Image (cartoon, rainbow, N blue to C red; front, side):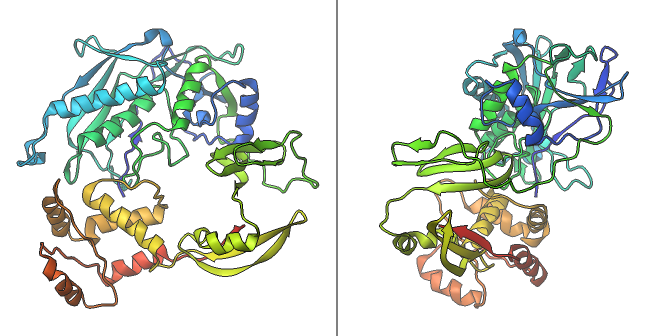
Length: 486
């Protein structure tokens, strides 16, 4: 699996800083964010603001300071120079060559997206020359590098090692004196298969520009553009959490201290525990006049609206202990609802057990569902999404891969699926054409293909080795059933 990775360039800090970037990772939790939120109650929410902070080691103290760094608003609009790529000739498609300006304009569309989404919080102008710019966007007309041992192809790089400069180690009014500047971002416009489409370069610039605006880490939420981007997903616009987070970053004073930590490690995370009984409920119920219901949830739980109800979370969207979703529909009995909609809760799995339960003295219904088997539609839906991603570099929204699964499909893309097959499919499938993809198992492929001959067209075929097929089956085989309540 190849990912767009924001690599951090190494280098010494300038002598004007009293801190250096810490080698220790910073993993925020709701336990440290909630006190910060109480001190800054007007921040846009939901957001992933803590993941934007820079962990800096103070030279004269045995402490690390976790601080927010970003551009001084007086610097906007930033003068930006987008360097046209010098495209290596072997990367060009002789039948559909790309011009350097195609990628330059893609980069400017990304900058315009940031300006529009944040409502003018940040702004840019076109620099007259590279020398007169505040920030350079370097479009590199080469294949992105693949650092040994990382298993990813790097398509973007924002050097942040010298970006945040802490000028004083003294904390006054919850902040330290800082400055922030990123001179350039680098985006490669090709991978091992050739030139990327300009819209994908636009997404990559959009992501890297988020780092250049002050974000040190990545969003923990896969639906966000500032998530550590993987090719098997398609997020091409800033999410509400992206927008809220950057608005929050520029709403608090520059240099705001999030936390002070010992130089090594982080405070231990409190152990999870069940709340004491009885659970204290909020005083005022949640009232939905449109759907005609009201309910009280546990005190401290966060409510997020949904099309037909709400989602209740014990914590934050990126760190919570428990959650549940309320779906409101009008039916005379639970049994009638289950008869009409029970299959939708299976999500492609198999029903293992079901039966009535009592929930707070009220009747309910419990379903235990096994996850989809390797032959199930949900599994093959994921396979198709990943196959299309490998063939056409078009990530499929909503697919999330674990490390093992990502490594497997990275292997399939590199060695398991024949390269000639991949190239033939890309060459045949052009705008205005269509294709039928089939996976055939437990059958003779020639018979299936013979049945399709009457429709004409060109047949392109390949196969997986027994070893790769076994690995795919093992990766997709569930180990435990999931439960659903109605």
